[in-house]
Length: 241
Length: 318
Image (tube, rainbow over all chains, first blue to last red):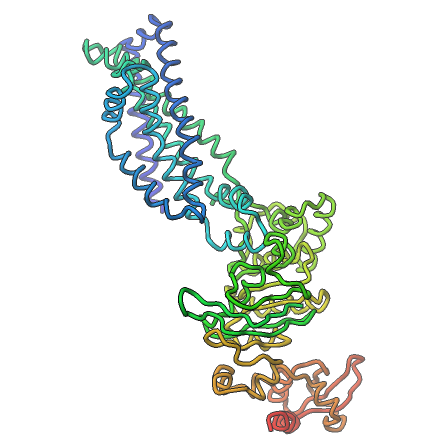
């Protein structure tokens, strides 16, 4: 236990030092000046990026959670393995390939990017929601049933609250991956911060490349913290150990 | 009153889980469904609130067929306690206890009064536990909450599926005693599943002994111990049934037959409502190999020794 703690601390300090060194390097080289010099374009790119992430994640949430609830109802248990296999198969396709594939069907542009990333975000949310609901102790369901809960009350008062932790974890994973994947949207004309990253690569310019890449990373980190705050509010206190 | 009328349950083609079972649980009685695992006792219990379907026959609750009642309303009107207590980890103790009243739409004040009354009933602090969560409680405390949660809407009947099975022996004894004391006040009609003959003897007004879906014997614990109906019952209650039957008879039973010995001032004394097992223990521990018997007013009414108990038991079993 003690040595484990020590290792955690050492790793943490090394990471902090690396981050400080990285920012020292970038700032002394004035790489981020590219942002202040192009602040208007920066704002547009960040807004596009967040729009793609927000829309695709939001839609994924609206599809994946109801779908997971649907397949875990006693009446529809039989379709669960079918749907899960399908969704899992979808996830084995690399996100780059999905973007390319969607471009083939829908052409280039913002909408295609949103749609492709929406498809890609469904799985982590769906899989965690199903696992969360299935891991709710069956004796709780039995007790609830025996005391006269209606099926909807079992879902909202027992299953979802006790699966909340797993569901939010799935949402966090999906959104954070999505922020990174959205950088690829530029490749099919979807816009976003991928614009600077790929331009930076093309013209071999560190300041353009890093202004894009570091911003994407910060967006991911900040979003993860925000979702942790949501988790703190949404997950019932008694289910946290 | 719960009446089982010719209940049969068949799984698939011809696997009979329950085979033509009939018996009646009278008002205010505890009936223990007893038997080895797989004998159909839990299935039988779960038929009452329709968690299990019935292939043939009918169960009447206070004279009304349960098959015609609305499932949800039926269940809300029957207390339900399970072995692993089934407390909801996402709800506080207060929310757990008042969940059925909440479903029934009771107002806040009525729920609060009920919560306080129930917590006092099992001797748990009203304020101390209110905002705590189930995982913060000991096993015994959790099971007590499980029991009062089932009592919350004051249902006339309760179903208890091995409610104390997960508790360690010492805590179990204590919770059993507490529950019997509560039952003495509340007079609920209770069906109680157990696989433990000692628990059945202690808790049951009557025992329904099951084997392979069939009812072997339905009788009082005393009669099951003294007059087993068949070979299986004899085996199930075990070789030590005489000793077991000691725990269901009181010193009072000997007193009421006027068979206590003359008044003597002895070192140890027992009261009239001590069971014979404990009385025998006291006799064996005492120097004089006998104990003084006192009544509720602490007046000596006689004395008891080993012969007295022996004679009483041999008369019962003969």
